Length: 279
Image 1: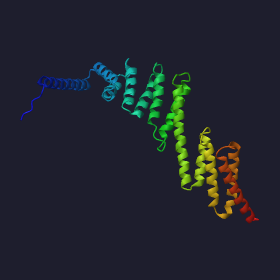
Image 2: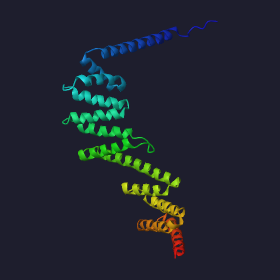
Image 3: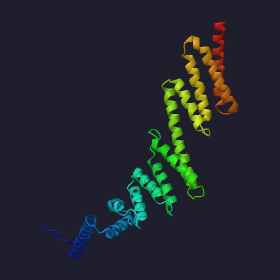
Image 4: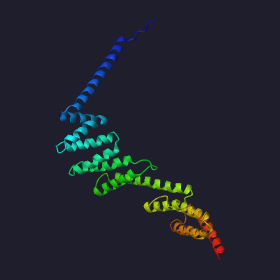
């Protein structure tokens, strides 16, 4: 038994709409390809801007890229450079976006958009910063660039945002360094753990982990003394007590003070025991 559509007119309209849509798309693609291949630069610029404003950065990018190579020194050079940088940002190519924003700053020192481009050059590096457990080269570059922005534009309305981004990135570096210290500690590489925690406290004097790291240093030094050869144990237990003195001067009545005190007491017993043996 044959099944006919219940409403042939609706089916006709639906098919007609589909055909019209395909014609529009094919015409649109044809116009784009035609413009790409042409040497009509005003038409390329017009189409590139239209695509950019529609958020079609991937399609606008090759047009702006070509225009960038031919408009240097012209009246539209600043505009094209600006759009090209944002197109790379739009397609999430942060390194190239940062490069073009930076070159915009260098090439157009009197531009009203210079401050924005300087910030975006730094912001793109911020976006490129990876998870804390990966290489943090781009994180350090972003911090330097953001700090330079705040120094160069101290009255900018973006300084507060730049400062927050710097704090976020520094926190990431701190987390990575702390994780490295803990890795050394877990592997029983106690001297490396102590060095890493000390570097962290020096580089991040306002860290909220300071008390925790002092206790970890005490534990690491105590464990290091415990497994040392007998002739070295007395002096290494004395190192525990030196670290405890630093801890106590900063953290007397805290949650970890009792734990630190137990480590100190045990280290004193061991030091005295080995001192007696020496005598």
